[in-house]
Length: 106
Image (cartoon, rainbow, N blue to C red):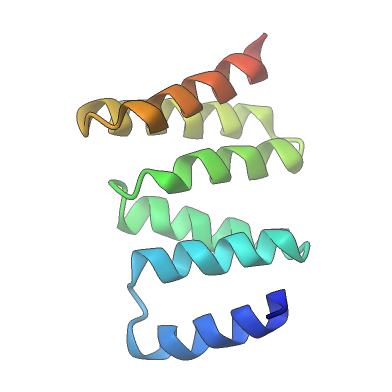
């Protein structure tokens, strides 16, 4: 299945469940993979606001800000994700975010 086919399928399902965190996250990932970075950014940012506990978003949103040459916002996103993952005791995600932030800063 191509990225465009997956995008179509995700959008169909999102019509019935527009607030589904995983589907919005998956759609943003698909948008990144086909270069629709603005669309991906919009979805990731909405997800961080509406579902801040959906911690997988922070890593990919931070990386997207890096890709868009926006290191300041990448840093803010990584730091916010670190707070969330620490609070949720999500150690693996915390380490990934810590590594991404360290790589960005050093």
